[in-house]
Length: 323
Image 1 (cartoon, rainbow, N blue to C red):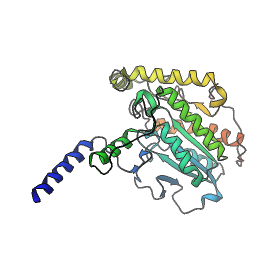
Image 2: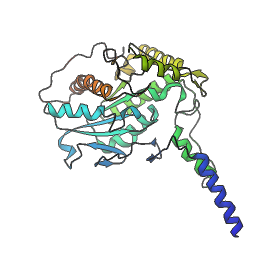
Image 3: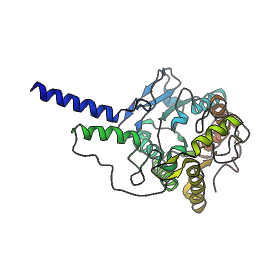
Image 4: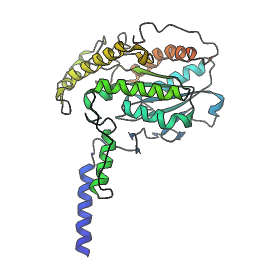
């Protein structure tokens, strides 16, 4: 009996080791979404959302914004949504932010958050910064857009321990990364609007696409990443970036009414050199620039959705909206 228990213990240890990635830890886990942002010292959290301000104020007496994103939006480093809210408060609009972000979160996780969490949060509006994690099947396999990388890892661990017989992720469907992103953004809008909530998404900037002028250091680092072949799609990362953004814009151009909520921010750093800390994530300068440029667009989106803001002046986002 002792020998049998010992063998089972060794087998379990091997299984744990197989699914543990020391350089890519999952951390806080949501069974639908995968990895979610840890508290990181934030004092006010609920259901995987960081709530700002951190005091005990009543959100029902304020403007309520639900904000979504991937690792480019994880607080405290990438707090563009908090900075936008702080600016709104400074203008005289009491604001509460319910921020949901996680590393590796894709457009699929955004749809799931809107479907599951928006009815409970009851935000006046939802804003997302999205795009880069859908590139080249980085996080989602080609034939199942709901089998996110970290969800797969945990579910496959359960299967290997025989806690479950098998793991299923729904009926297979094949879409290109760009088509999947557009599909999910369209569905998120439909769901949110069905709940009476305006939904807007910023198509986010990334190195390798658009008018951003890389510093020599940024260019050298990006080029080292651009030539890495993404095995799920069999193409270099740099090519996948261009292919993704070009196809997204083609799809939106062909059906502008379906994507009237998509705001093109791919060139937001054209006048902000040195905005990145790596080939995908912004540094403090980039985050501040992002929030500054988001503010008038957020303000306009709210006003045109019938949400009154004290002391606010509407400003055109001409050239931002993808048509």
